[in-house]
Image 1 (cartoon, helix red, strand yellow):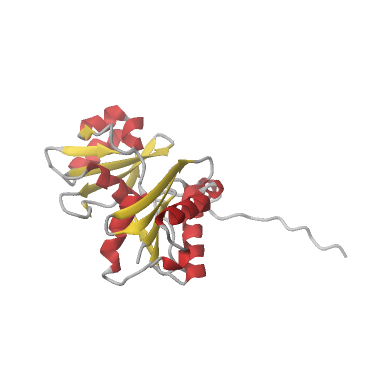
Image 2 (cartoon, rainbow, N blue to C red):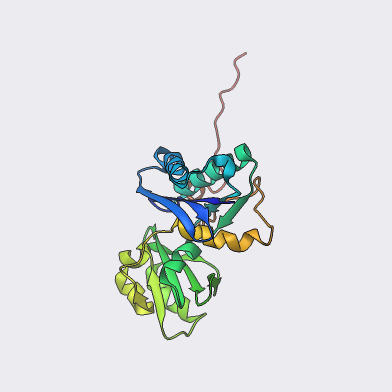
Length: 235
């Protein structure tokens, strides 16, 4: 049975339907994912000649990436899982992006704004990316030292919109693949999810959350939480 995958980590909404190399995908640049995400799902399903009930599982890119985008994507994926009675499989958006630079050791970078990047370093010499260290958010000036701390590979490929935003810093780490896709692909996520299906270990819907890697603006501004001043009852 086919899988439905979606990624909302960046301003490119990515949706794919398929299995075992036969994939229909739809991408769209958006202002907010709530405007186009379900429409893209509908378009991909129709082109594939499938109904929602034909799906085996829902695959969701868990980030890191845009806080709002990731929340919309996760909420949409969970809603579909609840409605269809299907399991949820979350995969790393950076791991999917790293497949764009295969084969070899690949540094996947997304622009985290605020003069930072989301970074994931993977060995993609096999079918699936193997993380060489934990994903991180850091200033681009620290990328070279961060990579060298865990890998001495002489030829590292660098992919993603983060590399294009900071070409000098990315270029000091390795070869920037400017022609590669710059954002995570839902079609790549189907391949990553297929690795997990055989193991029979889907994510728990209640506890599955995106991987933000850093606190949100609200958490930084209100570290103790929001305090609501309630009016005193009149006597």
